Image 1 (cartoon, each protein chain N blue to C red):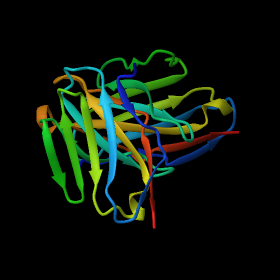
Image 2 (cartoon, chains in turn green, brown):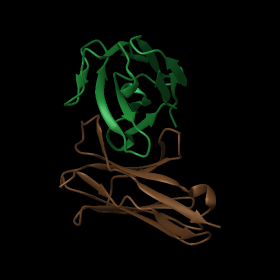
Image 3 (cartoon, chains in turn brown, yellow):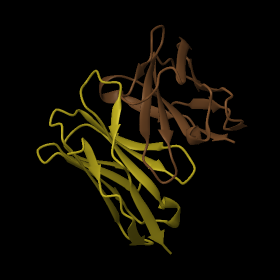
Image 4 (cartoon, rainbow over the protein chains, first blue to last red):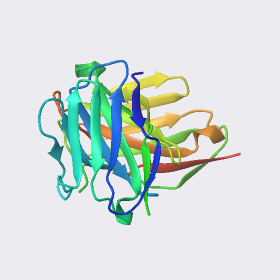
Length: 117
Length: 112
């Protein structure tokens, strides 16, 4: 299957600082990528849809000014958690779709575990 | 009613038996259906997808789709302890949709 990478895999930051997470599609181009958040023992929560060359689409209840998304190229989307607080500590996962029609698949990156102290 | 529903479990199955995971969806026009496996602390991994009514087999895994009943299932034959994970059902609602709608996942435990 297609490969999606994320960097960093784990980050610890102090409260009030900003953290940038990168998501790359390694062997295919992705005009759209998705950012999810997952708290321990809970299900995936879609935060936003990242669109190459245009603004991201945020899900209801997700603060766009706090979670900045940039999709600068066909293989890279970044999520910046601004002014992070302990409640932002979570597992952040990106995904990217590949293929169309009956060959459509969606692949996840390995995730980034954010801890805010 | 949630768009995609799964029994959260936990579902316990003895090693070597068949594990059956079920998922229902509310949008009758949904096009494609995906099963992901997620180990604790890891991101989801695509196991297989199905878009036509009937069965689709891949190794020990069989996906079954019944669009009339709005029901999709995943069977795991000869269950192994390494199959212990949370299984996520996801639905692509229409042909051009990029976004998948996920169920809450079923936690499966295979007992040696």
